[in-house]
Structures are given as C-alpha cells and as structure tokens.
Image 1 (tube, rainbow, N blue to C red):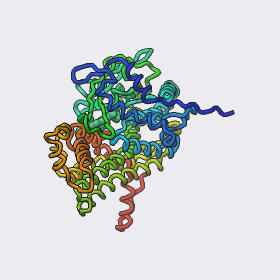
Image 2 (image 1 turned 180 degrees about the vertical axis):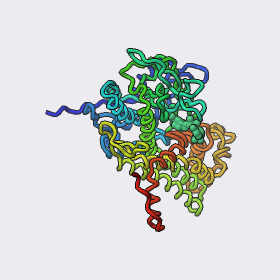
Image 3 (image 1 turned 45 degrees about the vertical axis):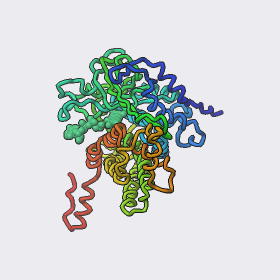
Image 4 (image 1 turned 90 degrees about the horizontal axis):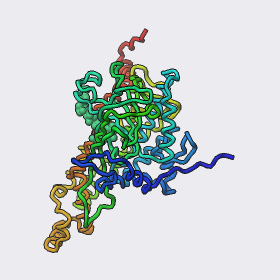
Length: 500
Ligand SMILES: Cc1cc2nc3c(=O)[nH]c(=O)nc-3n(C[C@H](O)[C@H](O)[C@H](O)COP(=O)(O)OP(=O)(O)OC[C@H]3O[C@@H](n4cnc5c(N)ncnc54)[C@H](O)[C@@H]3O)c2cc1C
C-alpha cells in the first residue's frame, strides 16, 4: 500500500514562537532587539501570510507541493521545481501573495537559493569525482527545511569594496565573504553580506557567491547555510515600516527588513557546507540564484503592477479625471509593463529545462533533473519591469497631483476643530464617500512620499540584480550572430564564414 503523504505545514504562530526563542544577535539603531520586537511585527505578519494562505484549501493547488525527497506535502516556498508546472505555480503563487500584501512577500529568496544550491552542489560533487558530499548534505539540510517549513533568506550580495577590483585583489580580504580556514570538522568564514532581506526574521541564512570567480578567488567560492542566530553571526538591521496608523488603519499593513549579515570567524560544520573553493561552480551558483530570483520577479513585479494600476485608477477616480485621454494612456503603459513582465516569466517557466547556459558553451544539461527557467526570458522580464519602477512612480505622481505630499496627519481628521473643515476640503469626486477619499490619499502618501516607499523603489530597481546585470546576461546569451545571418541573407551579403 502506498504511504499516505504527511503534511509538514507550520502555522504563523509556530513561526513566531520559534523566532521568540532565538538568540539575540540583531542590532537596530544602536541597540540589540528581540526578533519579535514590535518594530519587526509588520514584517513578520507579511511573511506570516505565506503560512496562513497555505493552510486554505482553496489555495492548495498552487501553494502546496509534494516533496520529491520525502513525498510529504510541503509549502511550495521550500520546494525544488520538478517540472514546468512547478515553475508556473511559483510565478502565480508569488503574484497572488504579493497582491495580498501590496508588495514584496519576502519568502522567494529562500526558494530561489535552495533551487540554485540543489543543482550546483550536484554538479560540483560530479566534477570532484565523488570526493565531496555537498549534494547529499544539502539534501539532508533541505529535508529538514521542508519538514519544518522553515524561512530561508539568501545572502548573496557582498560589500564588494572597490567595484573595479575582483575579490582576491581587494585591499581588505573581507569585503567578499571568504573561507578563512578549512578544518577537519568544518570551515571558518569571515566577511559581510548586505541588503539581506528578512534575515532578521529568518530561521536559516543561505550564503551563495555574488559573482564569477577566478582561480585566485577560490577562497570566495563558498556556499553554506547557518541558523540566523548562529555563533559568529551578527545582524545589523534596517526596518522599513510605514507611518503608524491609530485612527484610520490600512486594510493590510506590510513591513520589510534588510540586514547587514556579518560573519566574524564563524564556524560552519561540513554538513552545512555546499561549496568550498570550487570557483567555477561558485560563479555558476551566483548566476543561477540570480536566474531563479529574476523568475520570482516575474510574479512579484506584475503584482506590484496590479497594485500600481489600482492606485492610479483610484487616484483618477477620486480626482474624477478617469476618462481623460492622457490618463488612459498612462493606464495602458502600466498594463503593458505588468503583463509583458508576466508573459516573459510565463514563457521562462514554459521553456524551463534541467539545463543552464554556460557562457562560451551554450545551453548544457545541468543538475540532477530539476527544472530551471529559461534565462533569456527571466532576464528580459526583470530588466523591463525593473527599469519601469521610477516611470511608474512618475505616473502616480502625475495623476494624483500634489496632495500625497501634504495631506494632513490622522489626528487632524479627529480633532473637532479641524475635522469637518478637512473633510469639506478633501471632497473631490461627488460620487465617492469623502472618508474613502481621505483614506486613499493616506495610502498613496505611504507609496509615493514615505521613506519606506522610497526604499521599496530602490529594492524594485536593484533587487535581483540591477538592470545593467540583466542587460549583460541578455546580450551575452542571446544569439546575435544568427540575427546578423538573417540580415546578411536579406541584404545579399556573403554568408558568415564557418568556423574551422
Ligand atoms: C531593498 C533591497 C533588498 C535586497 N535584498 C537582497 C537579498 O535579500 N539578498 C541579496 O543577496 N541581495 C539583496 N539585494 C541586493 C541587490 O541584489 C543589489 O543591490 C544589486 O545586485 C546591486 O548591487 P549593489 O547594491 O552592490 O550595487 P553596485 O553593484 O555597486 O552598483 C552600483 C553601480 O555600479 C556599477 N558597477 C558595479 N560594479 C561595476 C564594475 N565592476 N564595472 C562597472 N560598473 C560597475 C553598477 O552597474 C551600478 O550602476 C537587495 C537590494 C535592495 C536595494
């Protein structure tokens, strides 16, 4: 008789309970804070939605998966993509959840890192002729990650020091995370990863290299996982919350955190090390995490497009200008970017294969058979939507006018001396309750004029790799020569000389 699949789903309360028992290694604004500090709760509630929504039967089809390792029913955020359908479902789950919170759902870094490491650890062991056991160790780590429904963040971006110098050439060797010592029981690592989203609320930190590496950079070819409160790990966090609301709460109040994750002579046991010195594989892992992550953007950026379109359309409605021609053109612009970004991700899912693109070689079979989205479509989608971030803010600013910058604070709408006057002077569209109009302008202020709104824009532009990184990936991987051949033929030129 076939074994009945076991469910391994964690609840949001269990997640919070686990955070509350972790060691204190989080620094915020000059003090050490608990993980469940009030300031972190909006971020915890945001990521907590990945547990609440997974528990709803109507979401089971796209939020749950069957582990290929254990057969258990697991949260999709811990799954290794087994086919193109899994890639489609990850994209759609991301769009669904990001719409619910009005921005980043913050759990995609973990799924993207585990999919990257799963493939690269396998190839590194193969190239090492069985002398290393990275992949087996990773599978053991992954089984616990899946069974306990843990949150993983991905620490890829290094401090990088002088941008024009490669890791081994930097005056300070710690500006890229490095293997300082190899011991019989594990490795000692040192360095700092920065901008690491939700590290301050994660169970586990997954570390991967940031860039292509040379032989002389081999000490920087490190991939490993440590608990987020591990000895030798210090986090300095920035917490991004919107202005608190007392009288007029938002429907959902999201929050985000980003950490400097500092490794001070941190010991990592061998069973948590998934690359150690294999510099060629380190470079591929850097690309592969970025590729999976750009695929996630084809879910979150369309969701942000949904939110921006809804916001622009409501701003137009409150101002009663929704039928104006220039406004409709701007709606079309947001829809074009949103749906082209989604379509690129959809195609990347559909064309997914157990293959990667190796510069100078082309697409080659890769990994133990799990599915990797198509690189060209991931990169064109992420580049298109990343570059649109500030244009979309410009559209919102244009349609809404200046009110988001100067709208009075909450208590002025409660104070009997100003309340009625402010409502009288807030009214624009006669067909919408004025309280809703006021509530909308408060929301728009969060998006367009707050410090956190500004941080979200920088994240939307640079997160997953700045647009220039995608341009490099696209132009190095795209077959430009074959397009020249098309034109050689059309123009009546002599054909390209075949390579001998
Ligand atoms: C809100 C937010 C959240 C993020 N979350 C995560 C996360 O969870 N995990 C993670 O690992 N990363 C994360 N990132 C990091 C993100 O991936 C990086 O910001 C991005 O890759 C750009 O790197 P950088 O910030 O170091 O900028 P830089 O690489 O320094 O870029 C600045 C400029 O310098 C140029 N430049 C850099 N190097 C060179 C060179 N050698 N030659 C010529 N020009 C160069 C770039 O093209 C760019 O124009 C996050 C970023 C933000 C803003």
